[in-house]
Length: 377
Image 1 (cartoon, rainbow, N blue to C red):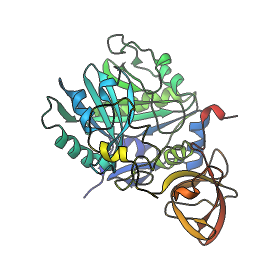
Image 2: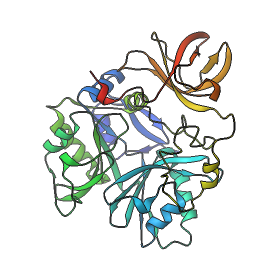
Image 3: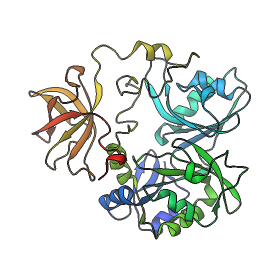
């Protein structure tokens, strides 16, 4: 099967990007260097193509009631123009995917899923919509998704030629006052697009949902506006180290069908305490993780040798866990990792070891995230 191509594929090739297969898509992994792209986002701004993400529109008189029953989110309580991070669970409480759900128009919701789980989420929505007066429309092919992330991101959007505020689409927001996890409609050369103040980097930033046919024009306009603000194109490698520093989970690493939300610290994040409606997986979620199930922690180490996914976590030489993501942090300058470990060794401050290709590297359990932008010196 041929890998799917982003609507921006020609743009990336013209920029000299290197590509990788990601969830069946050919996507840019880097343009210049992973480190340079990472540091640009922390200090100025980076532009990412994330068109591989899956988008589903849910509309109809019972759209909110359907999502209340299908997902962990309390969709009925999401205000217009706001978003919630949540999950779609299997009946036994396993995580099928983590999602963002926007109410982007009155009674209309945009569900954004991970690329590798497009088919899983589509099937779950199709099965769970039975009996509800609502319709799910798959917009993945129709939309492109561009992220501008970093401290200069708002200034870049404000300077982008053709990107303008329109009262009738803005849902009461202005770009400079748009809250985190909120969205607004804007005009790009007369056509509507959705701008959300969300991201996967730990920095301030925006994600722009645009018609696939207009993606290259928007990318070029953003890039031109960003030329004076240090904007650089960034690939998936930089996106991965940025999200790891921010302690954000990645499906297939920290999340999966065998993982219960409580193990990953998401039982309260993805499920509102006030939600009273029954939903798929609720009973298993409320029962919590199985006794003794490993839990997700952050680990830091000294030196330059980083543990990678699959490396063992040791306590006195005995295996007590496994790394899910790890890297030498470009921002912090030392190795960081997320890992599932036995509950007995999960307390912050616990001293453990990482088996890095046969060498035991001392590591310490720390609170997540590793990096917050407010703490930057």
